[in-house]
Image 1 (cartoon, rainbow, N blue to C red):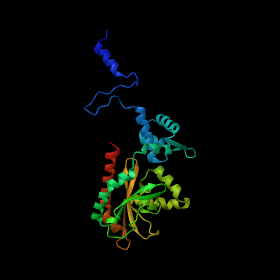
Image 2 (tube, rainbow, N blue to C red):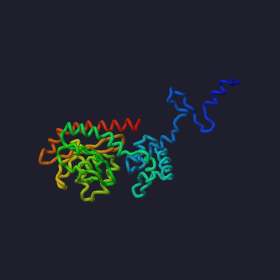
Image 3 (cartoon, one colour):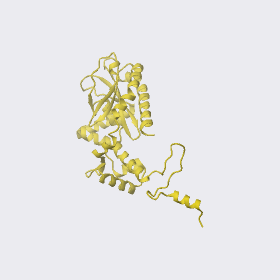
Image 4 (cartoon, one colour):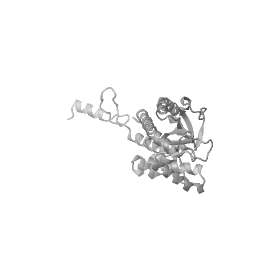
Length: 279
């Protein structure tokens, strides 16, 4: 015959309203119930699709390490709820406009400016050349923060709203070189003629080999620039670009002087992002 204590433990084992087993309290920050696995898996799938920008089922399986059948069920659910769209021509899935609702409380641009402003000042003191923070905006790179105003060099100080091309700009090439392959393929198809894609692919391979991208010398204005990505889990958060007068120093000389400090800054920004958004 069960005692009253054992009956109480059985009643505590499963909540009658939710069917979930409560978690034992652990200090002040305790949870009442175990995590809902279906919810955590669904969020993982949505994050993977958002990071890849265009993802097939097996791309999502690799990114989430979930069983294929589970991914298919979750993808269909997210599609039914309007959070993702299917491109039937390529059998890939993309974030739908509805995902914007999930980020309405977050101003990533403001966070980037807050985090990078003092760090950009330090970078200027270290390398002596102006530098920018850029993010992907559609099919171009948009400048979000800069230390040009603190530099004695007069290089486009009025940078608000400035954008640059993905294929020819240093930041765009850095983004393309290190972003996930499905996203890279989609961006290249959007911005490059088929006949030019082989040359661009070779340039991106060289970029990854040397560790930084180079602004095309054929575009106006005639400004030298090198750039690197800020990599966070599964995507490129932003790019750091160092700009300089091409007659002052060669690109290799600039890289020899600036690359390591730029890489240190990229690591600091990535770490700050992970502490803030990936606890």
